[in-house]
Image (cartoon, rainbow, N blue to C red; front, side, top):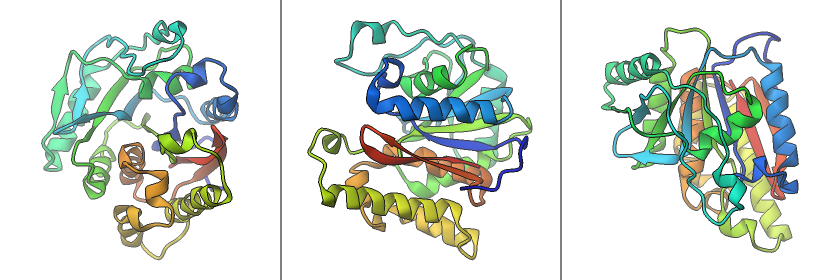
Amino acid sequence: MGNRTPGSRPKALFLSHGGGPLPLLGDPGHREMVSRLQEIAAGIPRPDALVVVSAHWEEALPTITAGRQPSLIYDYYGFPEASYHIQYPCPGEPSLAEEVHALLGDAGIDAGLDASRGFDHGLFVPLKLMYPEADIPCVQLSLVKDLDPGGHIRIGQALGALRRDNVLVVGSGFSFHNLQAFFSPDTAESRARNHAFEAWLAETCCDALGSEEERVRRLIGWSDAPGARYCHPREEHLLPLHVCYGVARAPCTERYGLSILNKEVSIYLW
């Protein structure tokens, strides 16, 4: 699904990043995700820099990493020893962090800079698959602890004013994130609830709905969608999508449907 002009520069990418470091460990439940992220990276122009909004970082105010060479944060537990030695030495870019900070301020959004925080696995796991050379400068942007969907759309709108024309905003989350369901028996009811929410999300992000105001209304009221709270008991893995939508304020140009850990999920490109 999509209408992206070949060679055009995308503005934002919401991706479903899988379970912890498993995509980097050869897990069979992530094979389709691995190949799809590699396919997407090969099919779009290479960004000059990345702003990554990770589901795994929440602050009272939107906060931007501002270090020149952030370390990695292995923010997962109970995985093989090799997963705590993954390397992804991409550089930070303090000047881009300052620009993001200024844009949020210009939009009336109080924000912070953090020169000491590292990059969590919401950044280094998918980017190691997409850009394994680790040579694209990155800054990471937190979610806001209030988890307000409208507020995260406004954050995206502020990022849409970035002056650089080849910065990709990456929303690193998961269109399905019910941890208990991943370890529960798959049933006809669970599949139906998963499918219903994915269908609603695809319609919301991709279809002509009459106006962008209607799309915003649906995204703000996402929890009323069929299967919403089954797919997202807590919404931190969905809200990076709201930021990505805010950047573009338009229907998505590509949707990629796939399976991760036997659940129906999706990736959206604007």
